Length: 180
Ligand code: XMP
Ligand code: MG
Image (cartoon, rainbow, N blue to C red; front, top):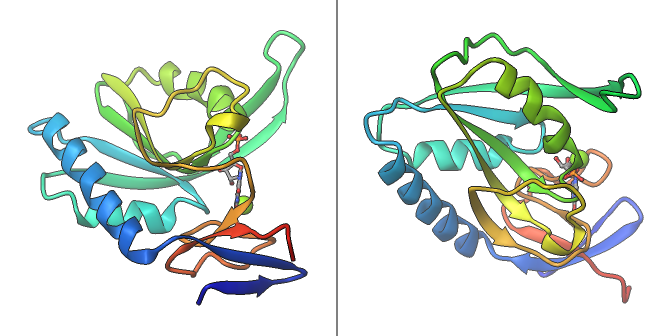
């Protein structure tokens, strides 16, 4: 499938299923080297990261744990600014080597607001692994330690990412086709 329609928009193929699988395996291999003997705790941020998290975790052949959270954002005080808090965080992060799993870092706003909450729980270390990064969209000082692909500053769907709830089950990545 080269072109697909979701709701009112046209998307075209951007990264193939084979290229995604190859790159996710490479990133898993890098993480495996870096975290040998550390029993890392992966925290997948729902909903978007669930496919990436599953494929990455399956490729990781060292002892490791995984858990999932949802993020909720609300307006804090003028000193705290926008606050992003975790729903369903049952894990004790104290002393753990934590790797946050994201589908995409776009402006960086979400992770920038959420990282203080993670740091507050005193993990031994904290890193970010993201499936996608949009370098041209970044507005906050957030850096991914592991990123599978840098992409253009356009809306994408597939491999967990949605357009108004549809498209998450596409095995490849599709980009908005503005010529259509
Ligand atoms: P920020 O700007 O906070 O955005 O880094 C992170 C969240 O925004 C969503 N997002 C997208 N979802 N296609 C999507 O399906 C996109 O191109 C896209 N860009 C941002 C996503 O939920 C991500 O976690
Ligand atoms: Mg979404």
